[in-house]
Image 1 (tube, rainbow, N blue to C red):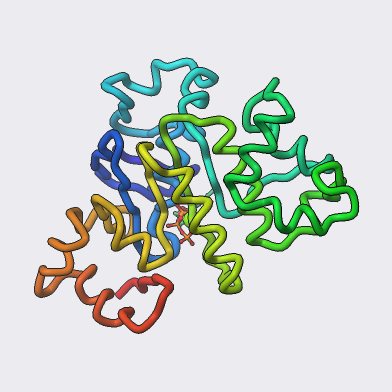
Image 2 (image 1 turned 180 degrees about the vertical axis):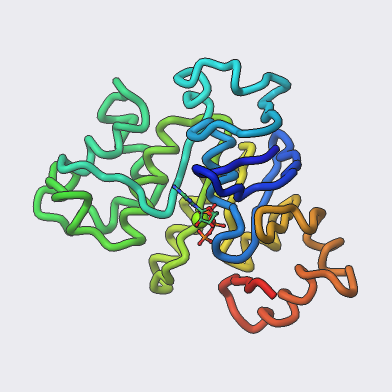
Length: 242
Ligand SMILES: Nc1ncnc2c1ncn2[C@@H]1O[C@H](COP(=O)(O)OP(=O)(O)OP(=O)(O)O)[C@@H](O)[C@H]1O
Ligand SMILES: [Mg+2]
């Protein structure tokens, strides 16, 4: 599959499979095309060359609304609306009851910070969630995705470092969300990469390595192996073009 924004081709002959029920991690330097792949997978963009299939169906032939119903997108910059916390979570599934919405919020570890808001789940969160921290916003987006309960999760991990408590709570919420799902994760954390079933390394819009984390780490001259060696002391994951 290939893709160009305007004239510039940013993905070249990219081909990989994210298996049903598995976690596939996309890693690579900034600008290598990870987010573009994620947007293409959910048909938020259309491929310029080649096809993407979900469950054997070419997504370019699928009704975009039906297709999006199969996906939960948990992205870096979650969009929050100038409404209450509960209504922001209910966006995950139109018509969900209060009880269902609050259960998803609790499973996403939102209860603790929401209790400290003046009107709890009824608190207006301000223009694009102005009064919430990054980790809190992320947990709201996870609650939305839990409520939606779609079979495919596309997750762009936050690059911003969260404090230790937020980090643990986000990880716990995510593990509840990801259980049993087909997951495509743009991974910025070592832990995510190590727990993935498959790692796909992108560089300058091409797949340069693909395999289990263990197999890739065992490749003597591999990019992934080199990065693991360099990054083993650090919890966060980053790669540089060379
Ligand atoms: N909307 C856009 N219009 C034009 N070019 C874009 C657009 N979005 C991304 N690009 C370009 O496409 C390339 C791939 O971008 P992409 O966002 O997929 O990278 P990424 O791997 O997700 O990077 P990061 O790790 O920084 O999030 C980059 O060169 C980027 O500048
Ligand atoms: Mg990105």
